[in-house]
Length: 362
Image 1: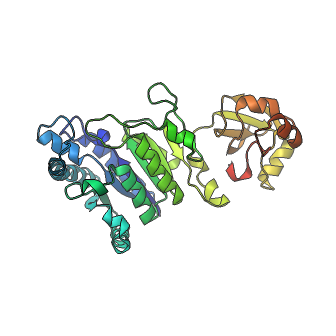
Image 2: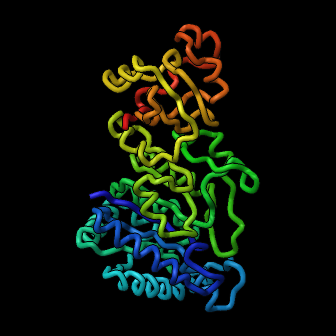
Image 3: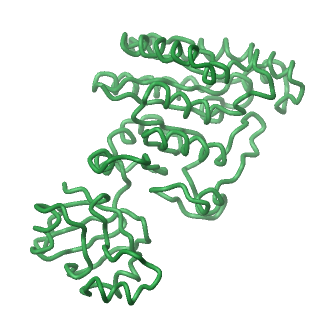
């Protein structure tokens, strides 16, 4: 059984302050029911309690007073759980409520109990709805958002996939005018620099906390997807790797076979490399890396670390992989020997176009 965690932001579940998007919840419930039939256990981390409580109390901004914020959480959590229970019941599923604090993760015995409880629930095909217990949490030790909570939860239950859905499309090169980054092989300082905070009056997290959550989950061997939850019916596309729009973060520290299993979840290839038959034999039969000398033609527009497809001379797709060269670089390297490439690109310490660890035959 595959195990996934779906973290849903406040903006996805609320229609203005105090109103629940029951239509969206019902769409999500339908997708979860389908996934369950296909063998995927699901845990939901659901934000929105404080925002729903704010609406009931007529508040326009998130309270700075901790006791009032706790009161909002207490009011809103009832509405949130009622909506989830009703939505899941319509597709024949049962919801359960699990409220957690940071202590539940930092105390070993309590974290083991959390793991046991959640595993018992999903094994019985019950859908846990997890949220931070904002009505009792101290401000000094709060998670601050459910992004980090969902990542820690992924490590405890050994989830395969963490999906964080909100109102953003994914990680952008610039928060307002940039382009979507479809795949992140490693979270570097440059990736951190692209993350910006949120200005939503009901939310707490932003892209900064999502990147921090991705770091935690990826280190534990859990793949991460950050994208828009505007169309919950696309959940199956995300799970199955069917060209879902968003940013995919590959798990770190995995062995070759484990890394390659995630290649089907990568976004659609941005370019195509057509290679000669001898090169095909090397990568398909011997498991070699793809070298520039075997490339016949290059099409599409791609940058370093983008996903590209590899075709044989008969125009048949034989593999997908993550390129170490941009298109412009590869046009200069095409057909050259390894020694020539290392001279041509002094900044590169390895000549292969796609390392065998990042190459998956189809």
